[in-house]
Length: 460
Image (tube, rainbow, N blue to C red; front, side, top):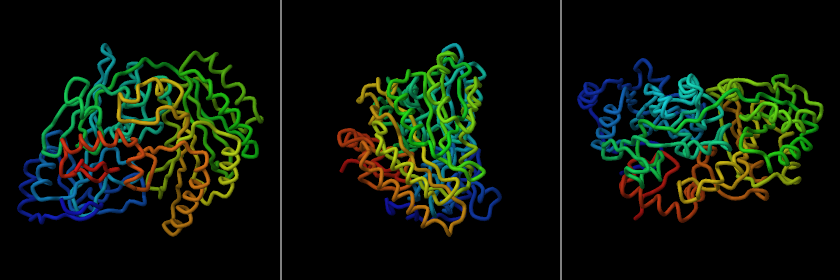
């Protein structure tokens, strides 16, 4: 299939052939110079500056099928854009075809059966807006602009993860356009192997069906602690999460406030009775005292809207992560000392609480997702504006990541990494699961047509 990188196309496409494709589409076919092309090729991470030869802005599944068949016929490199939030930038190729689902964002809720079907270009903001109208939700990302498909197929963390499992644990079925241009439905009873393996490696996900759960107001918001008390606060936080009920989710962040002050910012999301949550969080709310206690009973949608304010679109992003089983004192000391030298005010360190609840009770073999027993995902979110500052910011993130290796529990999570390394992709699933995935890849995509992803190559 030619080039296995992010750029290039083996086949040559004539204007006449492009016109023929254009006449078959309900959506748009954009090329360099067309209105909308520049906006369509830009994604969340400002470091990604690729220029596809063509962008197919799909209006529906038929457009996706036509685009895949055309790309196969002319041996074009293909990238798939859903929400466009993926930090590694796989959504945009250089010189090939970008299949853009960003116009496919509808969500249909069945409140009686407590399920929702969402198109593959939708975001968690789209999803929550519809499901919360019926008092229902599924585990979704902590930022509303995040695409539902990209988050779900990697596992999917969020405020409700410890109560309702990963986003993928709430998945009932998916529609996938495979490398031969067919649309298949995958579920626990149809194309079961594809459903187990579901991910961007195997096709274009055009819709996802989720099981929903009743959700009411939550106790959440921001609790801001002085940075000089960060070590004590993180110790209390780890002690709390070690035995916390499933209803407590969220994260704690080392960050910089708008006035330049460094701080510890706790973002809890308690979905149980308010009085119980207040008692549970009291060790944190009374420590310090805090700079600000903005915790209150708020709609779940309001909790979901907080994080996006600290991760603006278009900034230059470089991320790395570790899984952590706990926060030993030395790990806490390393985090605090390293963050003291942060080179950019928007760069922050996130300690996501993911394990110890419903995530850990799903059998390891039930999904391709691994490392369900990890208490935290430790994520270094490097974020800055000036391209001239790339080297120092990337180096700072990598050095911090190296310093945390002694405390890491191993493993890999594909959504929190800017670097693309074959060995790391294998580590995301473990050797046995990776081999199984490679076998499924050979069945559904034997030529590795879909390779702009954290790639699983087909079995030889």
